Length: 454
Image 1 (cartoon, one colour):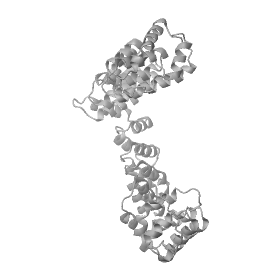
Image 2 (tube, one colour):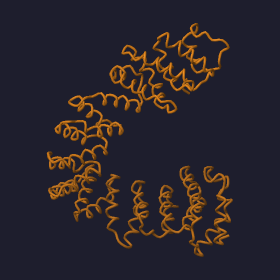
Image 3 (cartoon, one colour):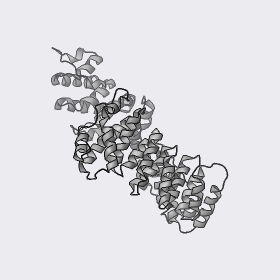
Image 4 (cartoon, helix red, strand yellow):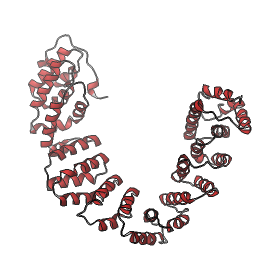
C-alpha cells in the first residue's frame, strides 16, 4: 500500500515548527484539515525539497487552503537543482495525474514544462521507470523537439521501440516533419520496425507516395513476416506480379524447412496463382505450425461436399491448437457441421480436442451439445482447464435454451434422460473438484421438463 493511503489521527496540540520531517509527513495525512494545512505551510516554509512528494499528494486535499498551499509550494520547488528530488517523486507525480476532483491543468502544464527542460537529468536520476512513465517522458521529449534532424532522430528511435503506444505516437507525429525527404526516410525506417502494425502503416504510406521508388520497396517487403504487409504490397502493384510469383515458387521448391515458405505460399495465394493449392496440399504435413495452418486453410477453402468434412476432421486431429482453431472458425462462418457422432468421438478420445469440439457443436443441435458435455463428465479424468470449460459450457447452454425451440430426436431424448438419471454420479466426490462444484444450474431441469425429457 502506498504511503498516502494511510490516514493519521489528529494530535491534541500541534506546533508544526517543532516537528521533524518524518512527523510532518505523517501529519500531512491527518484527519484534521487544520493540522494538514499547518503542516503544508511549514513544509513550504522550510524549503526542503524532500517535501515535493508530500505536496504532490496534498494538491487533491478537500480543504481548499491545503491544496492551494501545496500548489504554491510545488511552484517554488520547480528549480533545476531539485530535479533529482522530482525524479524520486515520480510515483506521486503519477498520482497527481490521476486526480479528477480538482482542476490541476495549470499545475500539470507547469510540471511538464519543467520536466521537458530537464528531461535528460530526470531520466538519469529516476530510480526505475515503468512503461507508462517511459512513454510519458518520451512524450515530453517529443513535445520539446523542434522540426529537423533532432525530431527525425527522436521519431526514429521511438518508432523502432517494442512498445506499441510509443511507436504509434511517433507514427502520428510524422506530420511534423516538414521535409518530404525526412518523412520518406522516417517511414522507410519504420517499415523495418519489429512491430507488424508499424510496418503495415509505413508500407501503406510509402506505397501511396508518388515521389518514391515503390517497385524497389515492394521487392524488399513482398515476403515480410506480416500477412497484412504482404497483402498491401501484392494488392497495390499491377506490375511485377510474375516476378513475385516466380520468387515465391523458388522458395517453395527449396528442399529444406524455410521460414519464408509461409510468406511465399501466402503471396502465391494473393496473386491468385493456380499453383497455390497444389503447393498447399504438399505442405499440409509441414513441421512449421504457421505454414501448416495456412496450407490447411487453402485446401479447406477449395474443398467441396464430402471433402469438407474430411478436411475438418483432419484439421481437428492436428497436434497444434492454432491449426485446430481453423475448424472452429470455418463452422462459425456458416459451414455445415460434420457428423456430430464423429465429432464427439474425436473429442472423447483426445481430451485436448474437447474444447474445439464443444465450440463446433454450438453451431449444431443443442441436444448434441449437451450430450457431449455429459459424456465428458461421465468419462472423468479431466484436466482443470477442461473442467472450467465444461462448467462454462453448461451455464451457457442453460441460458441459450431460454430461446430454443428445437425438440430433441427420440435417440437424443433417451440418451439425455439416461445421463440425467445418473447426474449424482457425474458430480460425485470422485470427480474433479473444479467440475460444477455447486451442481447443475437450476434452469437445466426446467428445460428438460419443458421438452418432456424427464
